[in-house]
Length: 434
Image (cartoon, rainbow, N blue to C red; front, side):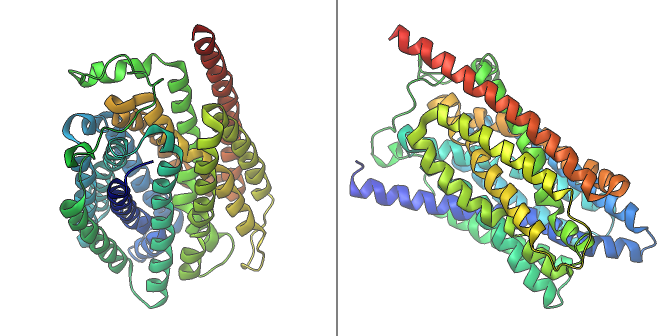
């Protein structure tokens, strides 16, 4: 049981990381919420509605690709330069590039600013993981990372609700981006002043890491990023988690990006109402993350893979049900319930991948690198959620989008079964050797 003073410090770290990472999503949800307004503005400049939608999808895909590259190639630097520094880089970059986006007036500048925003944000979660690993014992990873994973869902939901109200009040999309930058700026200052890199720096003992992590045989620092990531890439279980991240992120980013447009264009809600209703996805996901985190610490690694399997099967079934929803004027609650079901089944187990799993694999030495690779591979898949989803929706309608996402979820469920079997085999061998 941690001493009272340590518990207070840990609570402070949790609050700073939670609020700071929640603010990141004000500078991500803004493009999704503003998409109907951007499409309208592009139409006013002579572009067709379909072409405008595809252009916004291309901007989104470019940003997700930059985010994936940053996760993959920059995430590990938090293991070398410190988690707090990486976390602050993400906050500062999000603020500056969001302001640049709002000041822009042409598609090339929009694209550049969105790429810069997502690239700098890509180091934020790895920094958060690195700081968390230096403050908490591995026995609490599931709950701690579950709580911190709530940050991006709460931030997303609050951003969408707030921006929806601004739209209803008559504000344009540039005002949404300006407000988002202001929120992130306040969080940057708070974390720069009060966040501490590790509990050891304040005189507390080092946290206990998972004894089965891939770096358990040594506590020395890796001399290079290559030496840091090599044990990860040789692990079959780690590679399966990367594959799961790819599939889950395709589905998650599709809903994050296109839910407001689906609710407005297919179901007939107003732009502001669609923005507020799109908060259903992160809000329901928040409940799922808390429940999944609580179960994770009690069921162990086998339980995580099992919950991933069940969640992905339910996700695939809910997506297939969405294909049967006809275009309407927003009277039916069925599509909203199904969107909530996808969020509940997917987002809780998804939170394991770049969180508790990453720290379990990376331990004290490579938690940030592990998280960066897992999330990076995932967001390579997330690139499909922008331009590709826009093109599928134009060519085949939203039913075609949901069929494609259901297939992705089904394949991911099979990967989760393989992960479950791999972990059981590995831990059975470990038990026999002991």
